[in-house]
Image (cartoon, rainbow, N blue to C red; front, side, top):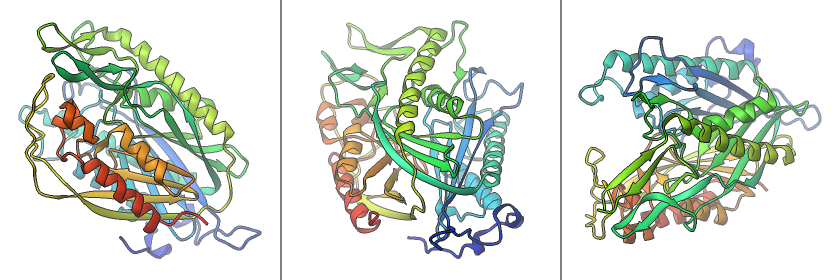
Length: 454
């Protein structure tokens, strides 16, 4: 675990005027006052740069959103970027920006993808696959970095004494995407399958009671437009379901409030409706049925439904003073299996499959305490049941289980998925039982390494 750093030692040059020369103290208790700031900036791709990674245009904006938290001792940043996934090199570049602007050390910066399926993959130099338009890729990289700098600058400028609280609600905009067919398990929509409808919300208020930031954790992939092609043959960039829901929340609370979406344990979860629907033909071949641009009406509908529920939960939360912050980075060992991300081992349903065991591998875990809320962050996309298990056994009053945090590591399914030979099990670098073992260890860490509020 990284050691705690002296407050002043982490301040970037030029930040002292914006933040003050030392921690602000609460008037009545003498304790350092809890402070927070938030910011949002659109990722603006230069005109004329399309196509980018197969996308021919843009339907709605992608954004970088950030919240800064400071309890006078611990300072941290949570950054959410509207991308499918974020490479280690891009995460490092984003952290460098946040450190430069806000003076927060890299280990205390969490970078997460909202996991929209309709955004360009952005590659570091030397990592791009053959055929990549490197000029368009470089422009997209710079667009993300510029947005990160703008969002962090705005968050720093808004840093102020704050209160926070957490709450939960329920939404039915997701469905289990593993379905049984005569040819084996494949992708679809199973109303009877496992799902996790819990909507977890962290509300951060100004002292006058107006929301400064609303952070949501929910188990659904933003894949309404996944694979959908326009009627003229192109693909459009969109922040998809998460983006629509966050814009709904931000419209409710005004331009000075930032809504962040941290994707939950959604490895086996899809939006209830999709524009490009997976099917299995009578001969057992996997295919898709696409309604093209009409799918954006589904994005708006489901985004409004989820956003409305987030607002409902937010309105029922009562913020409190002086929460305690802590961040811990841990590593646990889990079993692996042979897997290559460049080899598609799941192109359709099967009734048999061979899993080849691999050596134990390290699974990074980040644990954050924000008052009586715990945030668990992992790279792999957990099955919904695994996320619900962590939350059910957590010692905290509120627990968020976020995936795609500080990178991506494909799927971590539950044990039953391997027996069914699902898409997730065949596309996972982790062996059967790794998910359950990881859950048990994470719960133990929540109880031991990150003591709950007393």
